[in-house]
Amino acid sequence: MPNGRVAKFDSDQVNEEILDKLLHRSRPRINEALRSIRRPEAALGIAKSPLGDLLVALGRGGLLLVHYLPSDKELAALITRLRSFFDPVEDRQAVQTVGAEVKEYLAGEGASLRQKVDLSLVATAFQKRVLHKLQEVPRGAVVSYQALGALAGAPKGARAIGNAMHNNPVPIYVPCHRVIAADGRLGGYGGGRARKLQLLRSEGFALGKADEKLPDGVIWGHKGTRIFCRTNCHTTARVDRTKIMFFADPGEAKQAGLRPCKICRPS
Amino acid sequence: MPATKLRLLPLPFDEIMRRHERELLRYLLRVTANREDALDLFQETWLRAYRAYPRLRPKSRVRPWLYAIAVNLSRNRARDGARWARVFAAHGKDPSMTDGMDGSDRRSCGNDGYATVRLRELVSALPRRQREALRLRHISGLDYDEIAEIMHCSEENARANVFQAVKKLKSM
Image 1 (cartoon, rainbow over the protein chains, first blue to last red):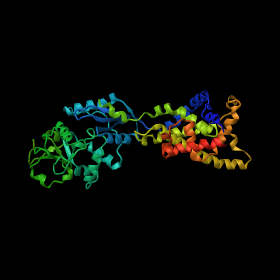
Image 2: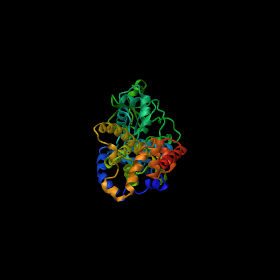
Image 3: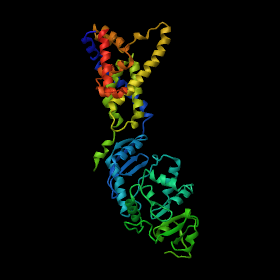
Image 4: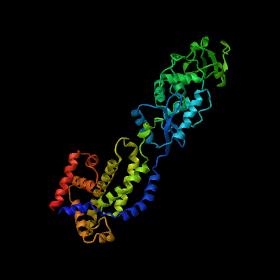
């Protein structure tokens, strides 16, 4: 076959007009078919906050993701995880409301975290339950991994709680910074210890920059008896630690609905 | 604002459709036996692509990825079609009579119509990999590195496949 014929293969066999017509015809059909498998949209962007830049994703059902801006590699992994459930659309303005709320919150405005939280990026039912329970720990209080495990129905699952905290997609809003080691040491934090300290300080804990432990003045609150004590109250020596929550001061404990101990008389 | 970081965010899928629908449909119209098949595959390609889109790594190229889906789908279709064709042939109907163009198209090609149809037949008689490489190269004008990506082979291999295909066509 001569060269000209082969060139013909590459020539305009499919008429552009027909192509237009066919495209026009098939578009509604394709959109219709796509609609049933479309992932919901989520606004994605980087918000500025006093804790540094945050990667934020907001879905229709609420806040999906808040992440201290990680390295590029982690960022890609995060976005991939988000994309298997949502179609991200960049929207800096929507996202900046989250940054503004965090800023207010750190300035001491306790009720400023108004965004609803959507836990659909949480992988397992257990972790979802843990994070729900964690939302009940009020501002001004902290719990141990152990105690949170007991709350979520896994009294021996302190390590599993650690994993759940590590995989918390919405830190700050779901307060994983309020989870500490059972002996009063502060433990780690996904965004770094400095941020954990900063958050706890803004919630009323008197913590210095280099502190490793909760301050001595913390109040022990018992979930079962609903009584709170000083640390040096002799009842604290034999109390069931899985039922304890630590409060920054007696006021916070009272606000959580507990009454002062009659032996050590806090406050 | 470290906006640069969000360049990792991939294009919205609708934008990808807008950019590639034309060339993809053109390609499918020319590799399939008839228009309905082409439109079917066209839709199926977009559905598959949408499902798989989150798994496409941010730095990979979209075009070869899309073509790979289309090529695989049309290969499956051809295989299934061949099975059906055997059934139809048994009933005295020749499926090779259908082609991508209806009557009006062929008339617009004038006297070249015969050569075009004949060429289609010759191309479809080529070995699979040569045929696919040739079509990607000459229908859609893809680069050899893109073809290599689609066909999971080296660039040299893609080039060789196209070369062998053209050589065979010329000798026929």
